[in-house]
Image (cartoon, rainbow, N blue to C red; front, side, top):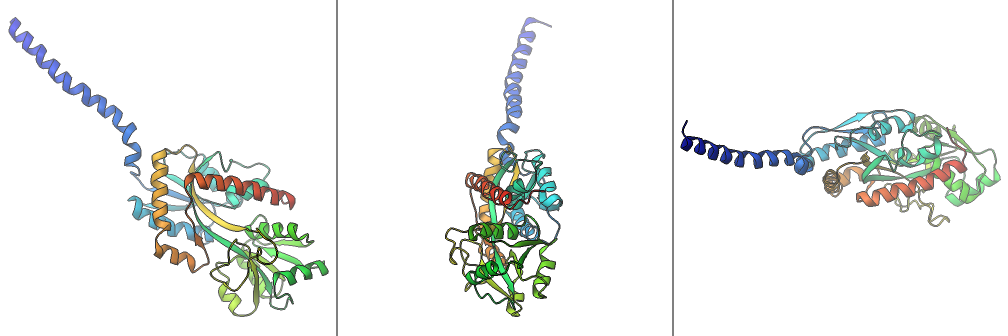
Length: 334
């Protein structure tokens, strides 16, 4: 081969290499710069750390359906129940921080349980990326119809007169239990707690008069209150319940600043990429701002509330401090 052809071949190779090298470098850099923009590329699992059918599960299924439309990939609810929500929450804390495994966090799993369990399998702040709160519901302080108290002031006076009175809740460490323990401390009450294994049986026993007082979330109460067999004396949220607008809050009943709500949120493992957090946060806000979604929750007395990731993280930290103190004061560690 002559020198002319050799020179021409070298020039051609240099030209081809000049085109290939930048293309290869771009291909190498592309995944790192566009990963979050491309997320999600497959279905997302939203873990509910409780059995199907409960308030957290129902909330998750409504939100998952709406997020599916916003994110363009299926958001699939998976129930992983056990240990008051700790099993499912721990599963998500250990998951890959890629945005494909999330959890419905809540006042129990990400606040109160720290005070209830000596050996928590995760840290509710450090081991999670908190995206947003979703809903909150107050507890109602209920009495059997034959209990003579007509308001919270009268109930507290009755408890102080009658040391045999007790109160029920859906379970040790439930939001109803801890809400009344907070009130018990503030009102300086001596009263026995009767924990049930769920709200359904506790409510049945209240209606039948087997227990005089019950504290639980408001979402299923309205039909039973309308029968006249039970009464709502107060609600534990910072504002009155939309289900019972004529019933005062505990704060209005002589305990300023009192607030104890059952809340849910969306969280993922610690270390989620910032752009994934942003996409999840924006999609969640769009869902929670939807008036048709708000109407679904309003029917059960739940209020939807969006918080930014930063605000939600600060909220979780404050809830841990609050409810750990209440749980320890009540001596209910497990």
